[in-house]
Image (tube, rainbow, N blue to C red):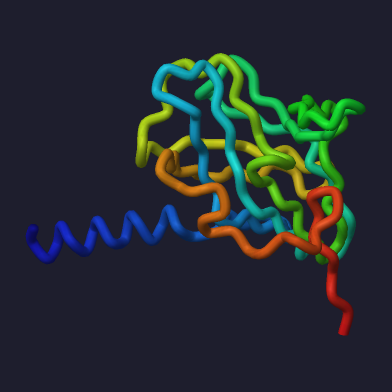
Length: 167
């Protein structure tokens, strides 16, 4: 591979690795996956940080890769079984807080995929916030990622939100 080709490939990889940032909202470590190439649904996961100086609310999400895009979470039912639920009201994002969108918790759900999610493909996802407006995120498809790969220790999270630290 020539130096120019290597440089361009490295620059492209770095561009996709950069966090999405708009109006104080920073989206870190996004990735998407489907359970198999034949799946008609998939999910996206990420960390969303709020540096806007005010509480905000993730209202909805949109993408042209699926017929419907919804915000989902997992909750334990009365029988102790985890169930995935559509969260129509969205998720709160407190000032100086983090919203963890991860497996087994809050996530973006793609329903009725228009084509298979292929390793390395980039999906455009728009997150709609009540105050910050729209944040467009380039989400790489990573079918090889292990459940906790790239994630921080979220053992102290409550309801998908990390506690904030005060000075």
